Length: 428
Image (cartoon, rainbow, N blue to C red; front, top):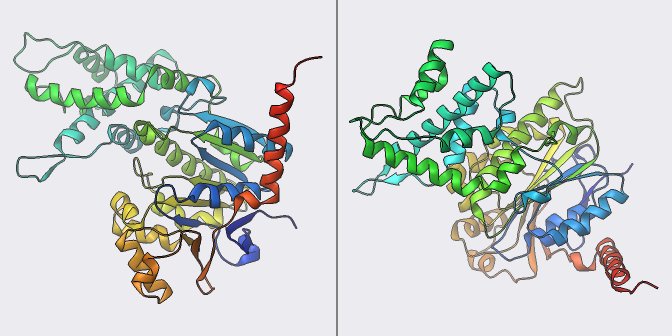
């Protein structure tokens, strides 16, 4: 029986089918920036993926070009979502496609506003400004849905941006007033007690100075994320259908820019939507599991914004046929993003943990206790060595997996070299 394999370290290559191994297929790889987490573990996993759908974040299109041909030869459907160069996408993504409840609408707005809460003069966290900005954006999203419903059209986020940019402030009023007030009043008459009107009350009747500060937060958040190219991506006729990941072998590449972190919130929102759709797809089947298992690689997992409900999802991944590889810089980074309790839940639900060294004291102390090894030995772990923990087995120290020596990778490089040479040869 064929199964995918995971390459954790030199001499430590295992099948990832939980039915064969008795453990779940979730993995955590921890190591500082530049230590080779992606190349040694994530990319080696791709080399040995033949049965599952896979979601792959990449920062360089050269990696996409290298692996996409390999997956096509294996009979995979290959799709690309390019957040760095949206004009190169084969699929679009619009967060409005996945909003179904009032709570999800508000959460979408909060994720897009993102950012660190401001602090007052005493240095204490003051959530008022970011919360108010999120409420304003949520009101505009809710109004967009109502207007689309009344016109019989499907809303898209470009409509939200257009609405927001159309705002004109009436500077002759003592209280903050805009040209959108009449639209919300009209929506209240057509749909009494609707969410849009209730949320808009956050900004209405504030002083112009206070309201302007709130609007500036919304403006900054939207301008950072929704460039014209990204907006074009949300309007594509062919948009991603996460359900298909569990129905047909698919390699979905997510291209991001390591230099542009402003899109992290949007990318993590996409991951949250993906997990929810996959669970719903699994639950709709009699077996309760996806027809095709799906493995999702989350690079820089604790950067950007928190993936909504992830700590709940990961505890039931195995039954649904979903698994993840989480790439982290440190455990403290995970705690900072998700909170201590959720971070522990996430780590405890990964039966495989690969430690690639680092200088984070909290992480080193945890590794020291798990290995029953002095802290100084953990902190001075040689660069080429990793520590592998697998539930039911003793910790193992081994040389990191040498992807460059993998026969499949060497074959890919050779094919790429031959193709480049053929392109350089002059026509006869």
